[in-house]
Image (cartoon, rainbow, N blue to C red; front, side, top):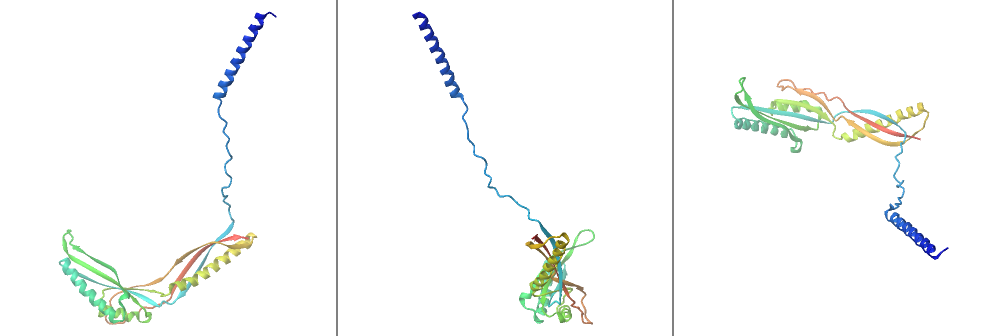
Length: 248
C-alpha cells in the first residue's frame, strides 16, 4: 500500500470516530433523567366492620307526684298603656302577696309570661289597651292543691289558672326506668341471638331516649262556692334505649 493511500484511510477513520463521539455526546446531553420513585405507604388503617345485634328496650315506671306547678295570672284593660300597666301591676302585687302568705318562698315564684298591647275596633282603630301577667308557683304539698288554687283565686284575684304535677327527684325515677329498659333490650337481643344461632357478646354502644316529667291536670275556672278538687293520680316516666351488642 502506498504512503498516500495509507494517509487517506487514517484521515477517514479519524473523521468517522469524531462523528460518533459528537453523536454520543448529543445523546448524552438530551437523554431524559431517570427518576426512582418509592412505593406509596401502605400503613393507612383499614376500617373493619364488627357485626352485631341492634335492638331497643322500653320501660315505664309510675310514681305519685310530690310537687305541683300552679300557673296563675291576672289581666287588666284601660284607655292608655300607662293606666293599663299600672292596674296590672297592682293586681300582680296582690296575687304575689297572697302566694307568699300561703308559704311559697320568693325562689318558687317565677314570671312565666307578660304581655301588653292595644285593643282594636272592628274598623281597625285603637280602642284601649290590654295586659296580662302569668306566674308559675311551685307547690310542694300535692294533697291540698285545690285549696291553694281557691285562695289564689278568691283572695289573690287570679283569673287564669292551670296546674301540672311533677317529681322533685326526677333523675332517680329515670334511672330506675333506664335500668329496666336496658334489661328489656338485653332480653330482646338474647332472643334474637338464639334465633340466629349465635352468642350474644358485650355492649358496643348505648343510646338513651328519655321522656316524661310533668303531668298536666288542665285549666280551672275560678271558683267561689265549692272547693276545687284536683286529683293527683300517677306520673309515668318512660325511657327508651337503643343497644348495639357484639356477636361473640
